[in-house]
Length: 202
Image (cartoon, rainbow, N blue to C red; front, side, top):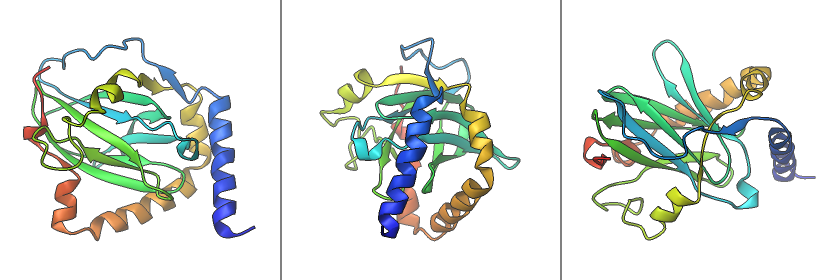
């Protein structure tokens, strides 16, 4: 068995274990409420349902002190996250790779981010532009279905202890992803930055 086959087998094992436990759970509120006073709201959407991408992933906000877990994600799910206005750094982590995204957000606004699979490299966060200036934007005909056909989820009770078992290995994956992020050009980072103008009035 070659290296690619071994990796795929390992990922399927990780996914099977994830599905057998409560790694995600439906959020009590399946609507998209308006942001809380003084907060910005970011809706992360993982719309894919392809079997090859049934790998568990999770989102975190990167702070100077630590990575703060937001939620785990599986296919056909979305996560609604509130944060303070200003600049933030987010991480999309999986067993195979870690991606980063900058967000400059304003209070009272709602933003959308597509969490999309990159073959062999986990799930990348792509800001959905309000102005349609990139291929990732809220004017795409499939955007309404991405919202309607995904379930809002939160981290399930089994996920944090399971994550802790693999923390050392996941730290290695994160470090590699961070080196890749630091090597990106200014234009590449701009593509992976959520801007104030991308926000909607809910």
